[in-house]
Amino acid sequence: MPSPCAHCAVRHKSVCSALNDAELNHLNRIAHTKRYETGQLIMSDEEPTDFFANVIVGVIKLEKTAADGRQQIVGLLFPSDFLGRAISSSNLYFAEAATDVELCCFAYREFERMLATYPGLERRLFESTLSELDAAREWMFLLGRKTAEEKVASFLHMIASRLPAVGCAHSPVNPVLSFQLPLTRADIADYLGLTIETVSRQLSRLKKRGAIELPSSRVVRVPDAAVLMRVATGDTGA
Amino acid sequence: MPSPCAHCAVRHKSVCSALNDAELNHLNRIAHTKRYETGQLIMSDEEPTDFFANVIVGVIKLEKTAADGRQQIVGLLFPSDFLGRAISSSNLYFAEAATDVELCCFAYREFERMLATYPGLERRLFESTLSELDAAREWMFLLGRKTAEEKVASFLHMIASRLPAVGCAHSPVNPVLSFQLPLTRADIADYLGLTIETVSRQLSRLKKRGAIELPSSRVVRVPDAAVLMRVATGDTGA
DNA sequence: CGACATGTTGAACCTCATCAACCGACGTGG
DNA sequence: CCACGTCGGTTGATGAGGTTCAACATGTCG
Image 1 (cartoon, chains in turn red, orange, yellow, purple):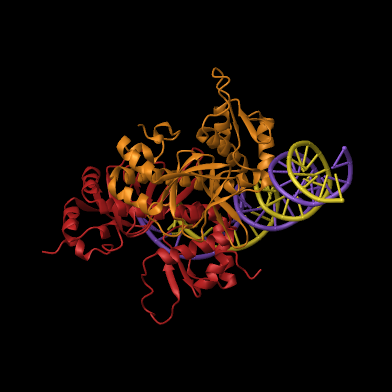
Image 2 (cartoon, rainbow over the protein chains, first blue to last red):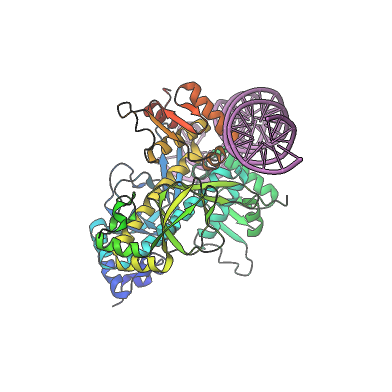
């Protein structure tokens, strides 16, 4: 009998890709699905969490909050991404569902044991941590050096490339990108180090420029990804 | 005969701490020392590098550059830190000596083999990567949400806590921190997402406030680390 | 319908970037 | 030896980009 994992949407992109079928069966035995609604806390920064998880559906924010209320999103998790600090003790940020979320969870203890048993798994996790580090550093450049317009354009470009293609299947000929924003304006602002007003204004600006269309406030169409990319890098024919 | 590593300054803090004496001897056989002067390129973002290294002496900048010349430092490496992406292929940033630097280098191939042989080593490297990720995310908050004054205060506080204690040994009673800045104003600006002028002004401001003293432009004294910390977090008795 | 959350737009303000002058230290060459 | 240029750093004047405060629009839910 085939493992339920065989039909998993993220089977070949998640950390599970490091495991063969037999090993996957083993992993599957300690796994269980969990759902969260938009806005729910998934991992606290105050008390330790007792599980790891693969993101199956939805988007998760990793966020830092200061005593005075300032917030900064320090990472986003998409389907196939891994949640939870392998090893580690304290969390310096918390995880919250940005959309409705479905996770494939592994109890802490048992997953640690799997890590020890299958070295490929730990290596795969290491690789994904290195990717997170790359992404974080990319974002450091954005936060420190990009203008508001570049930030918003970069954000849209990133979302367009990371979001699993959904809803744009109806016109396979036309390479127009169209997607739903998984984040509110407030979330986007907290991700880009801006205010919601500035985000809103820059979106309007990009629309006027023709770099994007906004059929509704949460839906974005990108007629030409290259144009958006050029705005994102400040490469405006100067 | 004791391994040369026995007297290494970073023996117990670097990744080497994962190895016992015999293993260390093995590692030592593939190691060699390299020196760089301030400003020298250590790892390029264009061509792959053929070695990993422990930082023995000095400070290294990890830096990103955009086509139009904008720069952002995305990480600093201090003695005992590890340089080089275990695994990985391309580098998205380059490494440059911020001060004169001494490295303990390992050839790529052979170090990879050691990683496979001693799983503790890979795990130790994984842990240090997680710490880097934490640091990067901490810095994302700084870049996105802190004011110029908070940024500079945070930077000084970070340096004070990471820099190996040197030169302040003459007054063990008084807990005054005093240290040399390993970075120029331009570097500090690139690390904080500011301009050199703003960095300079904020340093003067902190001096006027009494949060720091500046015996010379590169030497900082911190009479009270708690005061500096409060400025760094915007906790100014509001 | 009203209450509330989300998003847009306008006007005033402020922080920080920009441009520029200046200082001291250092090294070089006439 | 001093004139000179360069480099790192400081300080001032000015202005732009983003924040703040505020009003308004839109959509959803009881």
